[in-house]
Image (cartoon, rainbow, N blue to C red; front, side):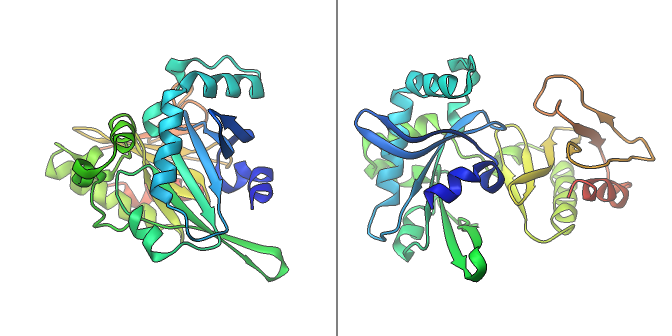
Length: 278
């Protein structure tokens, strides 16, 4: 599993490989990766046995990372000949991903907290070397880890204090009902464009991804939505000239087309633009 993942890491996960078998403080991480979009480190662990605690191990790994930030930056800089600084990293979006052929119901339930930065991915191998990777989604009714924090150990408290898993609710909080309804209309329209489009809330935006590739992002503002279409790998055309191609050095400055949205008048046409990025 590890060899398969590391040789195809960017295609499978959209992440950049930093180090295989990264050792720090006597602890070995199978794969250390970097998320170029969220500017955060991701630890990937591969498991064949079914008797390990995903929460205990995941929290332990994240705690080690937060206590040894400089070593992670040095490893990245040496591996990529870069000059990444501590302030360049968004430590709040750090995460651990466990990859296994299967997880027990107990493991799935133990990690089913909406704000726990631990993900479970099941990997299935079929005939003709077909590989299917299925991230296990947390339930819509998943509780907050803060609800059990009184009986949580200090490592969990340290991690949850510094790392935050973002949700749709974070982006919609304090927004007007009109903006919430506008967002819901565009969200549903985007998800209906194709099968297997996933909604992934990030720190500054809500991302819509297919096969780990970003299609479009939505920034929910107080008076409007900012929709960013990923035009990097497609032939893009907007005959109505509704938006503008971002050319600055912001997150969306590498080939994203920005459209400001205040109503649903052009929803169908805007969906035709988004579909070009699929």
